[in-house]
Amino acid sequence: MKINIKRYNSETDLQEIQEFSLPFENSTLLDALNYIKIKLDPSLSYSAGCRSGVCGSCGVRVNETEELACSYKISEGDLIEPQNNLPVVRDLIVDTQKMLKFTRIAKAWSSENSENILVSEQQVALNEVQSDCILCGSCFSACPVYATNEDFIGPFALTRSWRYVSDVRENDVQEKIESIQENGIWDCTLCNECVPVCPQGIAPKQDIAMLRSKAGIMGFMDPNFSSGMSFGGGFLETFTP
Amino acid sequence: MNFTHEIEFYEQRALVGRNFYEQAGIKRDQEGLETLLKKVNYAKVHLSQMGPVDRSKIYNTNLVEFIEFSNSLELAEIILKGALTRKESRGAHFREDIQSRDDKNFAGHTIVWKEEADLCIDFIV
Image 1 (cartoon, rainbow over the protein chains, first blue to last red):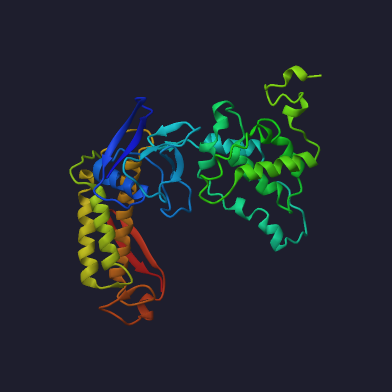
Image 2: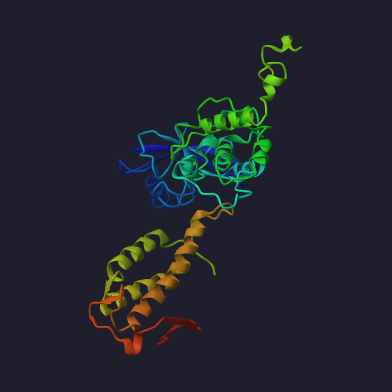
């Protein structure tokens, strides 16, 4: 079986697609990468950890769709590339600092816990799925908004934000909602690209929609509507009062 | 030290791993442990001929895996010498050749230290 891997070396700035022949079929992509590294080309670079879909280290793109290398079964002629929207360090390895930076901007953490609060099973269920995030970056890579807005907080950090905003123990929700107004929830196009690629069944688009309603209830508004229904440089600008 | 690439360390890594599973698992005996120790020593002695192929300074996982392999050989020797010196069976350390427990000599932690290049083993009883 043959698979193609996009190689990149930042020392030489060389980029090429290299074909590798494998003497087996029915294997995961990670096993194939390991075979290539051990038997064919030790310079092939990729990240991996647990080998069982738990750690989220081996996110890559296969035929332009985000996958975990350890969970994906290879097919003839597959094209393997590094994730989108992040700087490539080498071959399939990307620098995730940019993605993690957005969790800081969104203040997507537990900041102030209420005291003496009892959490019911239903309340735990509110963000159980979002808590399962393994930080693989698939949603971040699939998001098309980055093509036009480099500063978009993005599906990864926004899902994380909803995980804490929806937590009944969280006292400072206001601060979190405020920090995702600019380049945040209103800049998402709700295109749904981030939903099917999540290996954990998280739906960032849905979480962003939840954050929008929460923000609406708290008195925040979509800036695209407040500036005269322009939809961000859209077609109704002549109607601006 | 100058590292050449005459022996593939990935093959040695697989070999040591497989042999450890078979001969230094829960059931072990003196003969198996000694054979294994020879293989580990072979790898340690020839380490300078097993250098990484990849010479890049950027995210060199070939080099990282080589360093990990080199460290695992240090630990392998400690495990094997500890198991050889502990002439009794206790919990997950089951010596097929010495199946009884010996609290008088071995009811305590194994202490390992280095003198020059030699490993020294003692037990805190």
